[in-house]
Image 1 (tube, one colour):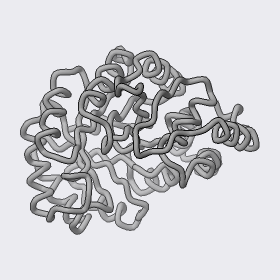
Image 2: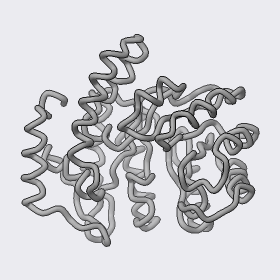
Image 3: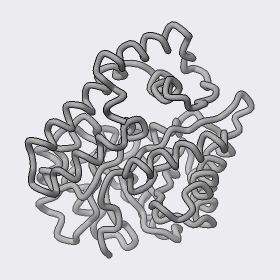
Image 4: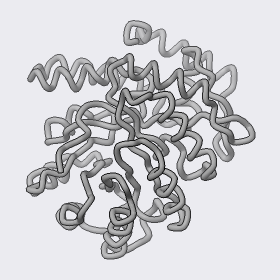
Length: 295
């Protein structure tokens, strides 16, 4: 199986109204903006997409609207992980009926709960029932040795790759070194995308790429040209935006697009909605780092 996902992908924000209906117009605007910024596609319904708090209907609508707006231009990976296996399989069945490229899932129950054997069994179920290639997660919520997990995952039919969402690049290097099956490796943490690429990632999926896609693509393309100095400078620019948003809830991160003119809709409880004061603060801090020049 080839490495299908190479490049930079946004963990696209979920946008919805007070009735939990996805906002189709905003989805279209985000998709166009990010593709025009050089992104290769979208990771829909993951942690950034608020998978832990959104009802299945909202998640399904988001995926449908991304597929429609994409019009075949970029690649789409649908995250189907949920708190209960019944809902996971419902979301997987829905994804199987759409024109996408892959599915992915956080470990079962989205938390550190199951044993290594049970986690592996979970991914076997997804791989067996998915029409599309499946991507597993390497994350701190895995209740097992990460390198051994990657070794076992590599032997499961229809598992195409790993999204490695840990800041431990020693562990990531061990995983890429034992990757003799050629799994597609994608870096998770935005703030260390360059580290992931250096340690063997084929691409990256991240939150900040929603906001400044051109900067994220700059890291990747500079790395491919072996211009590490330029890639590092792009990483510093990306991190200057992360420094403003980190430590706040998802509504605050989404508000960076609000100040750019996107209608980011409602914020579901228990997340606290941003205020006008918050928006002014974000806008002011972005101006301080010459944000407009990054767009």
